[in-house]
Image (cartoon, rainbow, N blue to C red; front, side, top):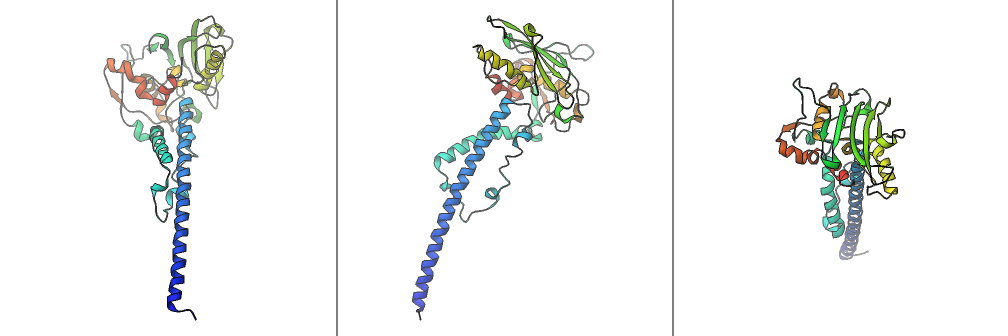
Amino acid sequence: MPSYRDLALDLTTKVNAALEKRDELDKTYQSIRAKVHMSRAENNQLLDMLSEAYPEVDDNDLSSNSSSDNDDFADTAPLRRKRDYMPPAALAAHDSLARITKRRRCQGRRSCRAEPKPVESLERDSQGAITFPIVIGKGQDKIQIHALGHVVWDREAYHTSRYIWTPGFKSTRTYPSLLGNDTRCMYTSEILDGGDAPIFQVTAEDMADTPFRATSSSAAWKQILDQLTSMGVGAKTHASGPQMYGLSHLGVTKAIQELENADKCQKYIRQQWATKSVSAASTDDEEDNDNDDNNDDQNLA
């Protein structure tokens, strides 16, 4: 019969082996957890790119399948939670991307849009009606808005958390001609009533019989940019539709938000406003309105 000393030594050996196994499993867990963090960060970066390319798509639609808080790794506490197990490069990349995606996650949330943004009111006549055309931007970036359209509140596709797509909206701006010859022509951007969903149409003045139509403002303008790029014209390959239309301008956002029935759009989160000087408004309206749209605009010729 083994002595108590032998039994104690055997038990100690087994305990030490179990502890070593636990440490190995813990390290494996932390390694997998680091990979999950990296995957989430990469996923959020892709969502950022999608949000920038198609700002009219609701953020909730983009992120509905990308929750980072409802899985085993988020809620299960390891035996010893040691962040040291995350590789330094992975940790740095994760933290950097987390800062980048923090802004995207904030977009569309009621608490963010509830923070008043400075805006210069649009010019109005003696009766208080907006004076058309509304002119925003300068030089080659000048956009004239000829009509704001009307609110369709009872069809879900006609608004998102950030934008209300109003059929009847019409704006014009110049851009390089698709006919070449280093000329510019007038492009008319419109929102049409397409039944269940709006239709975004852009028509070049010198190609009036060939309008470009799509289910989003960005996609409509992308067709034009793709053709210009194929011709060797200095235009990028993706556009911020709301900026090209003039919809991302804060004054325009405010005016559409104040249209009849805008308050009935259930998904739309109303922006709060603060007054500011005309000089300040002329320089940073669009910068304050939506950083995603500004990033898109920087990619346009």
